[in-house]
Figure 1 (spheres, rainbow, N blue to C red):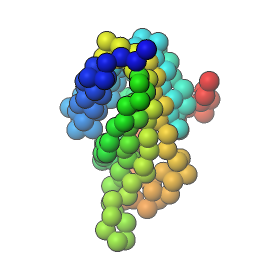
Figure 2 (tube, rainbow, N blue to C red):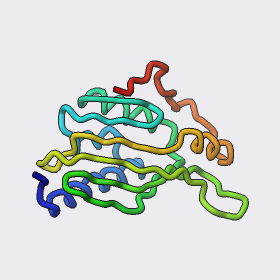
Figure 3 (cartoon, rainbow, N blue to C red):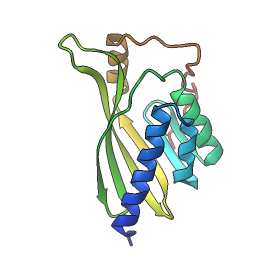
Length: 155
């Protein structure tokens, strides 16, 4: 049975608040572990599958290292029972020839587990489109950049 919608909405707002603080550089990305259960699973289109608090901390900090000049705007969310969908973008520095932002749009699927926490997040976006956006952008990888592991797990 699904949790109360108001409870889920409050958890989403807390998640987005932490996300905004991480984007601004006010907190490390790993601070988002606060909104995940201890057995949470996080699946990323590039970095693969991560489970548990230690794996989430390592993934969140490593995957976002060197991306300080990027933005990650949130556009909308939808709730279906305990399922949450978030629409966002990886927005790279620079703009297209016609003056538009360089966006790689994506979506997150989260499962709400209660007590303000999520038990699952799956981030879905096109890795090939992201590579194309990176070529179009003025962004250059920094020394802080961490490459995804070669032995990514998916299950």
